[in-house]
Amino acid sequence: MDYIVIFDVIIVILGVYLIYAALQMKRTGEISTVIINRMEIGNCRDKRGFIDRIYKQTLIFGGVALAFGILGGVNDMVFSLGRVYDIGSVIVFLIVWFWFTKTIRKGRTEFFY
Image 1: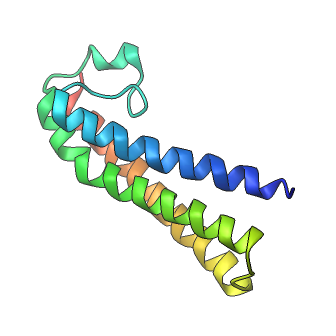
Image 2 (image 1 turned 90 degrees about the horizontal axis):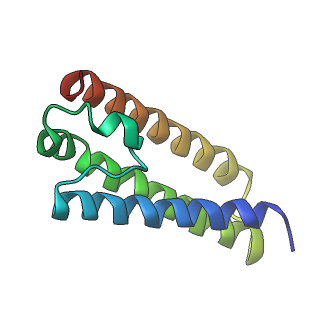
């Protein structure tokens, strides 16, 4: 078994968990500790506003991570999608990741003390 497949599985789990966390936050009105650590959640002025601010972005990042992990697994185990896919997919994943972290930072400055 190729060790890179382990990373693909971890990224798939990350994607599924982010999607679950977003849906759970929207349903319960509580911020997930995956997004913000437990100690900082108490400093939130408007939990519902923060959740509304990051809900779609969390779903998008979770979906991208899920797709990246699945396609990476297919690329590693079934057939090669090529070098262009390898480089392009990593670039797309990193861009979405940086965009997501920027959104979280903006949400923190807007909704936290």
